[in-house]
Length: 65
Image 1 (cartoon, one colour):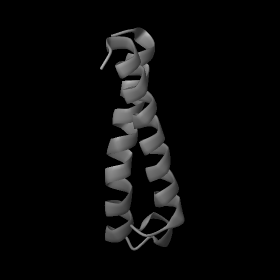
Image 2 (cartoon, rainbow, N blue to C red; image 1 turned 90 degrees about the vertical axis):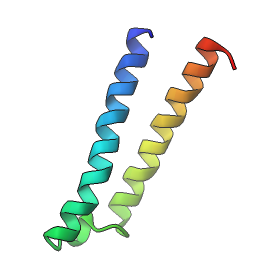
Image 3 (cartoon, rainbow, N blue to C red; image 1 turned 45 degrees about the vertical axis):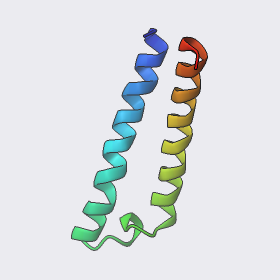
Image 4 (spheres, helix red, strand yellow; image 1 turned 30 degrees about the vertical axis):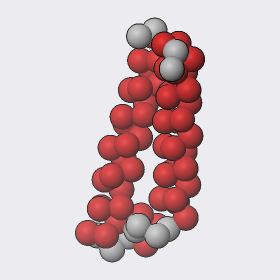
């Protein structure tokens, strides 16, 4: 796997962990901005999805389908 793909994968894994932990922290400490339905979490979900789509597209382009 090329270095650029490794960097994208690393960032994606970090985003996924943050995406998992932020709503849990928000619900546990009653922080409104970090709750499951907040716009901040939804935007972060979309960014994570876009990054995953870029990673998958580059992998398919590199390896073939």
